[in-house]
Length: 168
Image 1 (spheres, rainbow, N blue to C red):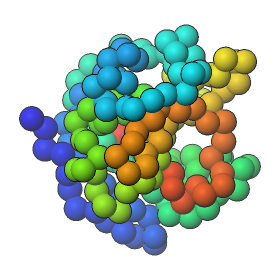
Image 2: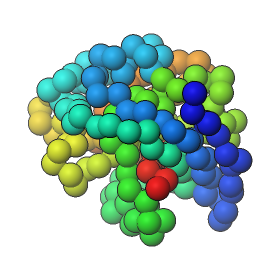
Image 3: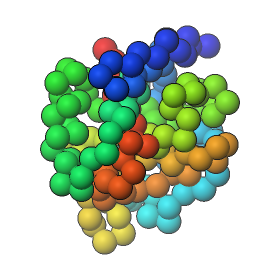
Image 4: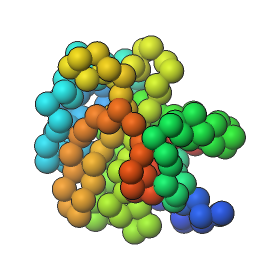
């Protein structure tokens, strides 16, 4: 059983939390079922959310910048992530995290914050909607409800977005 948590750090209003030893899930249906998702966007399919085969447990860092980003701020978000010298985790690890950590064990400071798994510039991890538009995969979280969704942009109420990164 992996060691799952480390104390939350709040610096300059940035919230972080480390999850240790998370194993990836390489199958979409298995990820949805074992990750405790109650539903999913109809565009979340094997075709639109391609999963590359990944192996080995990784430590993950969940980060919330705790601020509102404008629609055009995607570049800023990824510059902030890059400045932390971290790499975004692909959806395989989002599924692994959701399997390892039920909502009742999620850090309180991340309660109801959506978790984005994003590697938008990497074609091997490019997620698309049914029309071929690039998008992000995320776990929509409200209370005990988890839904797997796609989004084109990170804007309105983006203080509720958190980003899943590799911590090693």
